[in-house]
Length: 461
Image 1: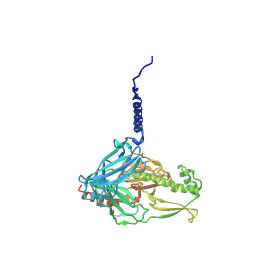
Image 2: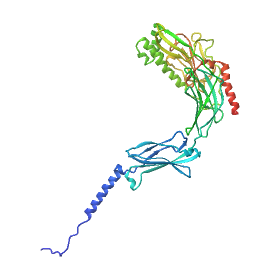
Image 3: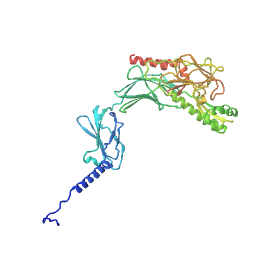
Image 4: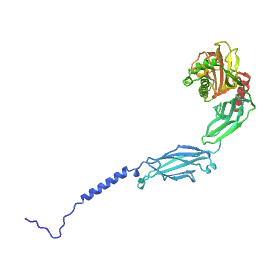
């Protein structure tokens, strides 16, 4: 039977396919937006301290980071009444990490005190059309453009080339950071002394330098710095120059023995090359080890420091001086093969004579040290160290506390020593000094004890 239809009737089309297609497109679009790096939603990072002490010499360095690409930034200072733009910029090239420089405004010189630094950074994500990827960080800023005030309270009477001296000084600053003394370009750290704001430094004049300038230096957290020159009546002490001819017996005997104990020198072939390896390369390494041990300051604060004259070897004869510039020749004095400095005193007594520590201290080393042989080394506090080389036997251990007058070792021929003797060295914060100063009670009284006494009177304690 044929079905009849009305004239003008049309069958309705379903909207579901269109709706499903639209949902599919929206899903794909959403997935693209959600996963595409161009629409990422991770905010940039600002790496900066929570508080900054601001001077005029050092601008602030801030690190900006983003997982994809940094866009632009702005930084401004505020004192509560005004905003001062200090830095701004835009990154045209793709960049995920950079360091920006934010100079402190000149207006800070007018008003010492607290400011706020606001840093705003955006990335290049397209997500910011519906929610910006922007990070804001606020930093507390203490405006400080005044350098510390340094006053010399007391100092040693004189200072000799290769010698030692003591300085007591005051450094005043609300944000004080570091205090030290520069002597010939070498930094000698200061120790707090007795009362807040007062410091003491034991320093040295390196004997290799004929002339030096000395400055007491104080810095604050804002990088403001004061350098106050200190003058002494200087003693320009001269040092010996020696010419030494080495023999085949010495080269084939002692030098071979010492070189065999060193992994580098032991591989060097040839008499003269082996000698240079011991006298120069090995010596430098051994002295670096000594300097590192003696560079440490064990005292964080001192109220009193007393040292007695050093007499390490009873009835001894001085056989080699400090600061001797030694030139070595082979067969005749027209063929120089090496040179070195002697940085201690050599004392000779009887064979295996007892060595004593004249002052209390802590043993920082009691082992072999190349050309120095068996070498106990003692920290007497305040940056003063003594060492005892070529010992046949060491009677103390590292970390042990020794008392004044205690026997610590016996003389010998270990290391680069031909005859039984003691190599006695004195160092101030890692710098070798003339031992005789520290062996004279009168010098210690005038240049150490008297300085502390004067300082104590000025401090009022």
